[in-house]
Every structure is written in structure tokens, then in C-alpha cells.
Length: 262
Image 1 (tube, one colour):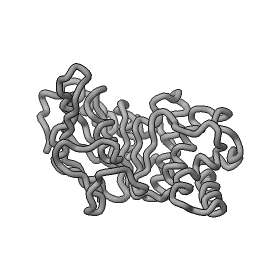
Image 2 (spheres, rainbow, N blue to C red):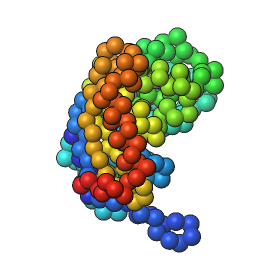
Image 3 (cartoon, rainbow, N blue to C red):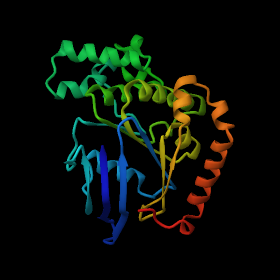
Image 4 (tube, rainbow, N blue to C red):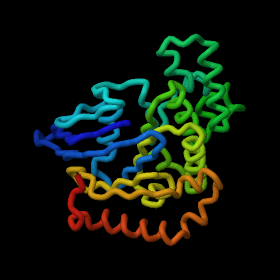
């Protein structure tokens, strides 16, 4: 269980003022769940993810994983960013195995594990290729494989499909749903897309404009059907999907009416 309690973040701006990015956020991420945070730009979604990753300290509150405080990066939290951070001079296999190398895993073992993950994301034939020969969607697959290589308890994904075209994005959404169904990983997923949040989330949290607060939570089960059947069409036409989409859209555009949910 990852638990966020009364998490607030304030940091100095370039003009000397203070930016209140997060305000008293409370959130639990249970095993075998995908929590998707959605909201307008600047609402603190990425700030929250960076705090969980250990990249950014909290001003107030706490974040714990299985009861242990998070105060720095750790291999139990895998991170996938919007823009891939692959090493251009290393081939795909060595990029996936990078975290294992830092952990001191032998070359033979880390390559064996990396090849298994490349098979999971459908890139077995590209192990020896340099990243620049891959498409954007393929590079994001490599990033997901690398994040999974150290067998993290939770996967943190900061708008990983935001820069992809619509067809590739749908393919990546289906890939993530399948990986989640197969591995049961906890996932925190950040997105601007309400439809993506509903397609992928077992829980969707809506965040207010700065300072970021959780103003609503919704439970959904569409990702389970997506993982099983791989067809996004019936999901998007489901009356419950449409109802939730419009409710979330109203909250994002008129957050003052909802008040903070804490």
C-alpha cells in the first residue's frame, strides 16, 4: 500500500514568491490498482508523482510505501516519463537493463531479465537496435520495460503517451492494460485526457487548479474489460463511461463548485 497523508508542497518561484503546488492531498494506492490523476495543466499532478518518486520533498505531510517513509528515489518505484530518457549510445537491451546494472546484477542475468521484458512489450526483435531507430511508441515501450526491470512495487507514469499519435496511443494504452492485468502492479498514471483516465483507471482522482487538491474520486472497471478484450469501442460507447466523462469534465472546468475532498 502506498499512502499519501496531508501532502503539501510549496517551493520558491524565480521572482522570489512562493508557489503552493499541492495542498493537503490524501490518497491510498492499493496493490493491483491503477490510480489515474486528471486535471488541468498546473494542478500539481506531476508534482505529486515527483514527490512519490522521491525527486521532490514534501513541505508538509508524509508518503509511505508499506509503512516505510519515502524521502529519496528507490528501485521499488519505477518511473516512466512523457519523454523517453533512453541512453542514445546504448542499445535497447542495455537500456532496459540499466537499473539492474546499477544494482550490481551480473551482465548475463540482467540481459536475460531484460529480454523477458522486451518480449512482454513486444520488442524482442529490437534488442540490439539503438533507440534512434525506434518510433516514439516503441521507445516508450522500452521505457516501460526498463521501469519494470527492477521489479518495482509501483509504477509511476507521468503522461507517458501524451506525445503519441492517437493510434499509437491506443496501442500503448492496450499494452499497459495487459501488463497490469498480467503483473498486478500498482500504478499511478498522470494524464490530461479524461477518456484515457477512464479507460485505464480503477480509480480516477480529479485535481483542482493550483494549489492542487483532490476534489473527487471515482471507481471504474473499464480497464478490466479493455485488458481482457482489447476493444476500446464498446467502452467509449458505454452509458456509464459517457456519464463519468461528462461529470469529470464539469469538475475540471468548474472546480470551485465541488470543494476539496479530503
